[in-house]
Image 1: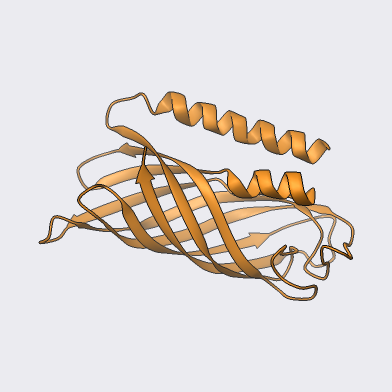
Image 2: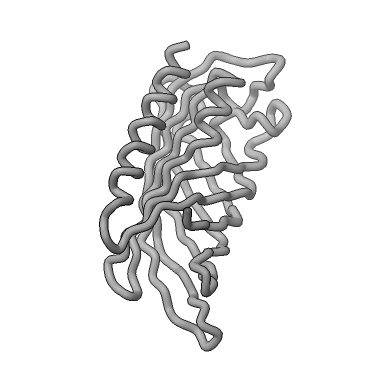
Length: 193
């Protein structure tokens, strides 16, 4: 029960901050949808069998963007779907907010090439990859930095379609498997609200 309450408080705090910040000039609020796969030698994946290191990944996130210049944008991504789903259905926490710096380069067809780095933090509470939904081991806390890179295309209507690669080392004083390594790739799309 504690993990559900903590998850909802974190999400509510970031959503309210994002919505309030979205009222500023040269900024926008949107939604990011992402799906892909990852190697993960520490955490249990609810979409994989026991003893499988990794599996599918998907999320829906609130997105706040602030234009720093014509060619630079700062983006804050706040996960929503995965923290709520994992907390409510599986009594687990996976919360991974991230900040990205997006550079854009105009192309001939009025679309833009988008690329740039991202950094964030990964919070985990749940069992290790040796567990399954039917046979779960002990849950533990883990934390680590997220390092990512995005390459994509922004259309005339400001939608972004891209690929993001990411790496996360995860550290836990409660798991003998720590430190863990997470490597992955995801397709993502950004939509303004």
